Length: 297
Image (cartoon, rainbow, N blue to C red):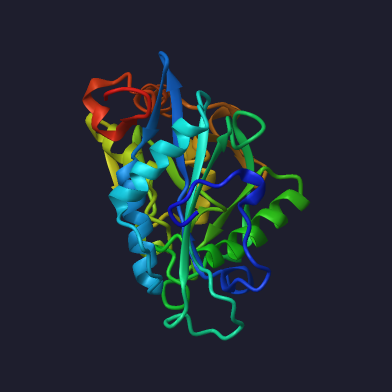
């Protein structure tokens, strides 16, 4: 917290902290994976770069450089002697005690926490619905910034899905095109080709999304960023979510309609297997994406 390592029970903020009341913070989700006695952090520098871009949108000041936050993350993992699959959460937030909306004269703080976390979802393959809630739009609350307050939109969709017996939700943008999941980007497979909504469909520019696009193209799979209709979801050969926490998660049904015979399709399985090797530093071609915690990359 603000450059000091603090024991878990002492990692506290005041009840009048601005970010608690107004969601005035930006954050990242980062994964680390154990392999052969080491721990590998996946795309650490890219996540920190996105954190700073998000902070820039809201003019939140960060009193540390991206490199300093990367170093602090690695040291945090070492201090906790973590050797398990881990979720890392850096956050920059308005920390002054004030109920007024203007944050330009206020203070900000930075914290990083890390804790073991295996799978985000309880089972492999999801049953999802298309939410009645629309995705936030760039004209009001920019989705490209990973801002704390943005996730109220996701929470509404998630509550609706859970209340109706689904694992997660897909949100449409204001024009009715597919946007993303409650906390994940989305891909469809049609005739052996991948498609995913573009940034103009109110999505977060996901780092796992970009990873999948790069890897798929390297495998010779055509990838297209384009608008996807709701009906097209129902007729796709395969559909899957991507995200740091979700990783690559197959979707088995959408609004009760079966996708890929209710099992992960061949392209999804291929990407899942390769992704699992990449994040553990086992693919030399992509070793630039992983940072070693306990030894040299």
